[in-house]
Length: 313
Image (cartoon, rainbow, N blue to C red; front, side, top):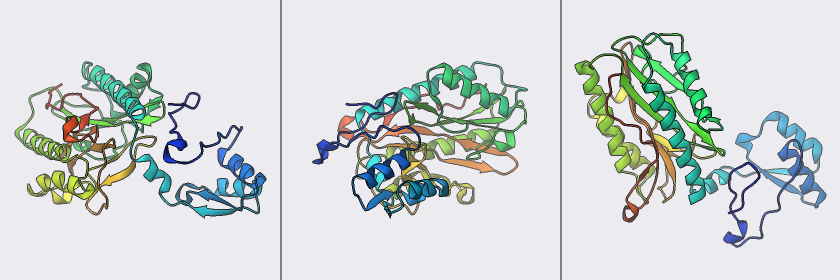
């Protein structure tokens, strides 16, 4: 499959019955170059994604082609990107291997006394050392009462004995982004409440993973994981979604959420990431990147393989 220099693979438009796309080779802002090319060829409209069009880019495009009408594409581009081809999935698989390797090396080091911020920076350095373009998103390391919180920004809090430690990181490889999240206990055998909470979130995550199949409704995957936690009395502590698509962005369609509309196709990479955070105590998040596969092909393909056993580090 053809590949742009140094970038992700691009699909052949001719396979869908259209003429091959003309490559746009231009310096500077691609949107401005596209507007100029469209105007030069006598076009009267240019399709744009309004939700992703900044004010400065709009002004630049309007200046380059003042007579060009801008028409909103809505989410059409995102929908075309939902199903990935095998070369794209290969990039995600390699990114997942890099993230697994970086996390595994961190778990072999001494953690007590180090800050969340220090550990996050070390993980991001390890991602690059192992061949990633960079982190897929800002790495989250959360300890003690911060653990289990979705999107937690690392602080100067130091890791202490008996803490839950939750980590969420991802690697970007050739433009494609994956995600993994794990929770551990620091330095001692876990307390009873930690074991109970971890087992519950693990059961919810497993239910969500097992629900991933072609034809499954987005909301049904969310429900499979959510009802495990809801039935245990944690409805108020749950995140707004169970997972989401990944690819060129870390948060793509589909959204695995209670009100989401649509059904899964084969070859769609998604995360399954339920969690519970208890204010003042901490919590658990378990997060994997998987690819939807039919049962005949073995079911969902797990890309992130770091153990989900509750380890005491």
